[in-house]
Image 1 (tube, rainbow, N blue to C red):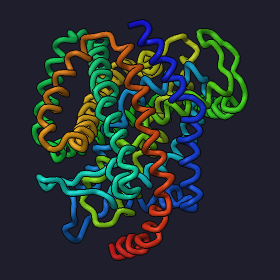
Image 2: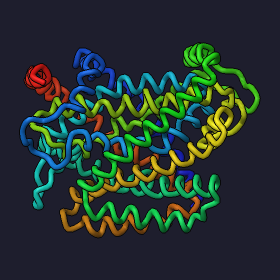
Image 3: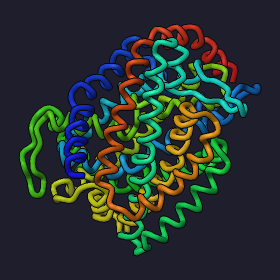
Image 4: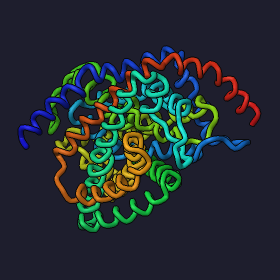
Length: 451
């Protein structure tokens, strides 16, 4: 087992090394320039479209809003609470700056993913809309590239059991046990019942649950975080200066902080940013492909909001709270560090973090169940859905009660391997994204002008 772990660690270092980080940032920058920074310029348009009422029936299964919430349910999770804290501990405060940069270029990546997902989606034998990287690779790049889509589906179906299931279940069980003394077995049992009840209803029920839970918990976490920042407002200017300075100069060791080079800030900022918002991994377009829309550009503009909300808003709250309270030098890490930051300012703040982590992780299990299901369906057909759901539910108590160092390493590696086929497809299909944007943007503007 040690040999396998060592081999996997070496592979993880390669797939999450310089080429991957350059690839993710490079594709995002390339798409931003190719689109003349449209995702940034049209941010307000995206929010207007998110809440705009539709005047006619359009193809799809779930509302554009619920499609975004389903995608956010999978991205807003442990990465926003534990992942940000880990990035700051390993890369210094400057890691938060590089998370922001990753998000800004990632908005273009997420926009392109959703545009292609809607444009190339299919209707399966049960009348459900399915799409994502495997479909835009198959239809957009042709039969000679089908193998690349198959690789994506294979990596996605396996990665889901780690990053989207067992790791999340373990986070929920650990948070509730450490904060409220709830036994891990009890948490596992509750998760099995709740997740099973939701999965029975398929994507429409997942979307309905996500459409209610995700906005509520995100707003609640944001409000509490703003209170923490407001009570430490005098430290905010210095925090921003520290973040910018640390992004470009090494940070010396201080207290429990071991010090960090500039490369560490870039590496952990980019890696944790991608882990959090998943721009470039190819997971979110699977959800957006089910949206009720006849205009791929409209859904692309809505989809890119996910990266903005996840990283620019939620991750920033976590990172700034950790820095302004000064606990980033305490030697703590992960969710414990975030809990310490909140608790140092607000009595019981650690309980807020525990509840947020539990709900975020629960919704991540739901969101990733849909991603994994569609990957398995692509590989083995509709008949594989029920067996997949059964295995998904069985994996929950295993994750909640076991040590997951190896599983985390495996899932993290498979996540990166998911990104490779997707990034290749995004680059090769960028002319299609550009063409569809030119053809359909005028329609979006007319729709908004008529409201």
